Image: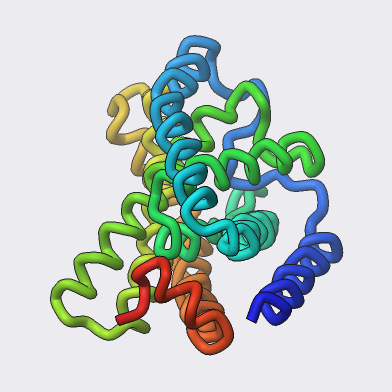
Length: 244
């Protein structure tokens, strides 16, 4: 089982190396936010980082064998969020990949995994930035995973199928990341006239054309990957109380 997971992880890392390149995508770029807003989002995400560290420590301590699966969740988020699709006005959209990890390990753990993903992308791919790491972490690694995890649990509690739960979690977790980013940009740059709401709608509209199909595609891919894990890593998913 672990061997199959290892090969899947290596495949994702190889795809990352082949497909990732310089990025100018929806992660808020270095220096784009005013200092006060950049600092504010760092303060907001700090409690989630502490919570995430504790969550991961507890998971690894109780079951060290889950380290590979934890790494896979991080690699999946890295690969998908490094893929760029051209959008309007010269910008780009991309998937987030955080839904899978949120389903497997909970949203707190993804605040750390997503933060690490964003840090490496800022350092290695010029995707995002260090000054905007707090803002990007909040949108992609806090809001996205919490929405994904909440929807997954809700659908399962309502006796929805596993495939529907995973699809909705990954799809709407992706979309809410971009809604949050649009709000962050609108707060920093309110429209005149119209204010924050008008600015937010403008930012959301820029990415809506490409982001909706990307989110649906991410949902479908996440279902496929989850089914592979359910087939070849059934014991690990049962230990995580994912499978019935």
